[in-house]
Length: 248
Image (cartoon, rainbow, N blue to C red; front, side, top):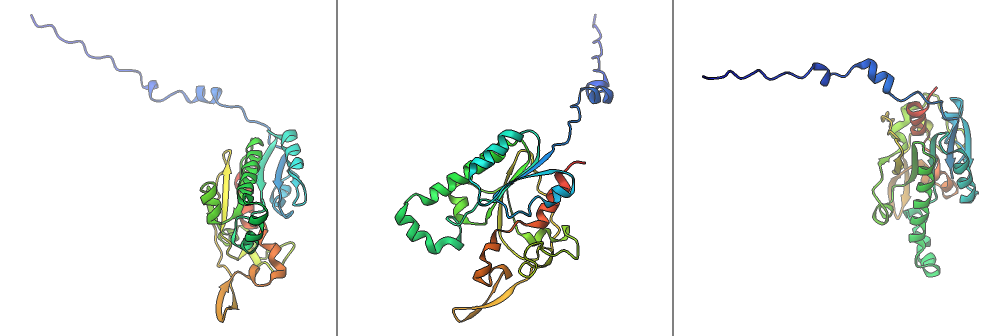
């Protein structure tokens, strides 16, 4: 006598489609909005988009030692909405190469020391528990001696995030409107930082006679007296970051 096989019992559909109400109950509760935005070693303009959105801004300015930044991070970690840093990289990028021979004679490890300082700065940013971004010149030496950046950007790639009548708040006669200049920049980011969408404008260039040939250079590099503006914050990019990361 042949016995018939019992049909296999089908699992309930809820195995594949969980109850939405249960998910809502079990989901994380909405946290209060962070109170602060932090910037280290910037030119004073980086946090303007966050200040307009009601955040209190914390600055460890260019002339301040790292102890000030450490103090701010330890006091406000967990209550920071964004953390930014713009460390000096003259020992690692082409603009400082003319002094490397003299520096190497005084300290053969001066570039290793500069890389270690970048590591320490990023560690401070990570300790804020906030999305962070650190900006460095697009130097192959940084990539070779340390690591590959999270992204490579140029200020003009985010120019349309700025209003059409935008002028630089500090150097309107040097910096093209809406960040319309090219500057290869490394971005090292983490803690959930999301790269904003590019909205580029056409970069402006200047023609400069060098070594008997006309060469195309950024307007920021035409005059040596303006060399300090090479470290300016990319305002369009930072506006886009605030648009993406700031909460109301």
